[in-house]
Structures are given as structure tokens and as C-alpha cells.
Length: 92
View 1 (tube, rainbow, N blue to C red):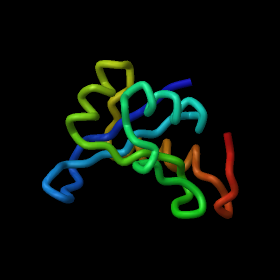
View 2: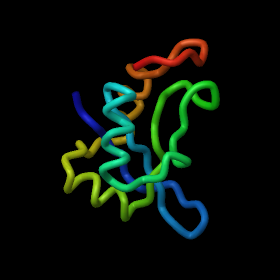
View 3: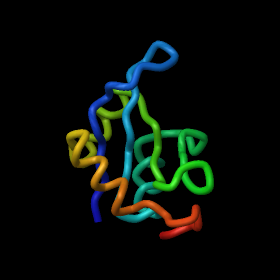
View 4: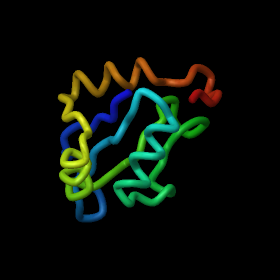
């Protein structure tokens, strides 16, 4: 299993943000906890169809050092499609 991050290009609240995603929801939560990201940054069903965390550019740098795979926009979209949850139902 792997954890992925895209580029921190989304501006909000004075920071640049990106997405932290994983092949498995449990792996995603484990990695986010190791990274020190609050669970309140998690977005998943039913709010969104693909489980992910929104993280800052600073957190992204740390995630890469911890082993997250850097992805282009096209790659993260492909991962989004692969891990999304149909009809907002949970998947592990």
C-alpha cells in the first residue's frame, strides 16, 4: 500500500494546501496520525467520494520525508478515481 500527495497549489486561509490520499483508508488514517495531522482535516464519505486529508505545504514536505509519493495533478486524479467510494458508502 502507498500514500500519495499532490502539489500544494490550493490557496486558502493564508496557506497552500494539497491532498493526502492512500490506497486504503486505514493506511491513510495511520499515516496522517504519524504525520500529526488532526482528524478534522479528513474528508470522506458522505462529504466527498474519495477519502483524503487536506494538508498544508509544510505538512506535505514532512509527508514526503516520511515516505509519501509525490504525484502530479493527473496522477492524483487517477488515484481519486481508484479509491473513490460509490454512493458515499465507506470502504477500507
